[in-house]
Image (cartoon, rainbow, N blue to C red; front, side, top):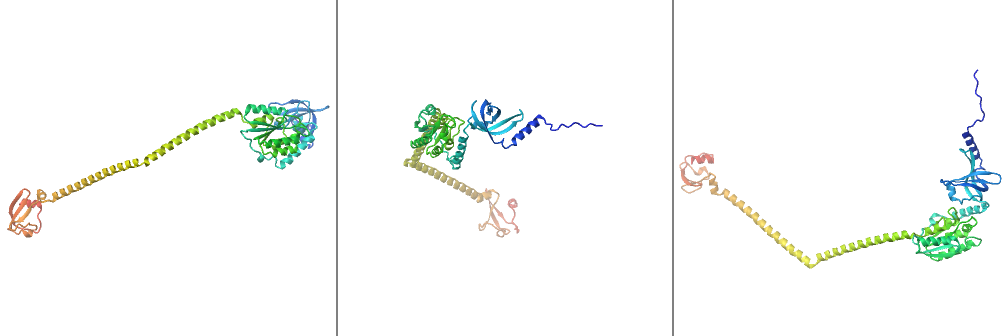
Length: 417
């Protein structure tokens, strides 16, 4: 009797188990949109740019991963900082480890500020304050640069150092203002209006890094509207590279740091020297082309004046007279030669048909001796008529014997004679 194999209920491979666990976690809507609070530890950031860390509290820990794109936009925490991380929960199948995949991270306790940031950003964006078509180009060669910042902060020193190194030709103006605190927004707005009235070519609004509370003045609605209302092109450089404040969206150009804002506002003097050198070469080339063009024009005018002078025309007339004289002489000579040729031809023709030439060819002239009448017909030479015959070398007498109705040929007549 054949035995049937034993069945193992709910048998899965490790791969199948991990995939089932991942799908189970991802099917829970609560785990797909969740905020988790804890302390950051075990930070690693490999060359790929992804951000790995552990979020823990007093009793447990969870592994977290933040992909490169999200990490580039965030202000990343340091070990030991308390944060709130938003993302979704899933399972890393290869390692069999569930993780929190983070897309947003903020310092703990700043949830209300961040929500206000997002609300105000959406409101101002809907009004068109952040529209790309409002952005103006930054002048390449600013003669006057106004800086709105704290006179005692590191940002002001950084801007001075960069501009002194890159473009010391520009005039630097400071519109001093506090950059944090309760009264900072109102004073920043006043400093922006003052810088706008100074007829600067570009305005820099800068400050160093800090927490979200430290930078909050640059998220204030009246400050954002003041930046958007500027008549002068503006560049913001607030905080560090990962810090984004609302004034960054309202300005014409955003720089990641105060030093970067100064670099974007100014050309490099070495590049300026190269531009001046190239322009000098172009100027030399243009001047050379202009000189050559004017010289050619002068030569052309000189030739035109020479050709239009009376002496030149007289010389031309003299030459024309000589040409016409030569042509007339040649024409007369040609006509005379032609007429001479025609005359010679006629002479030859006349000679060819003259009596002597005819007689030379064997012909003869016959007269009746009695009346010296030229015999032109046989009727004039009846038999017995005495005749006189003229040939080429003389004449002789003859007498007609008989006549016929036909005219004998010259050969037969000659023989008879």
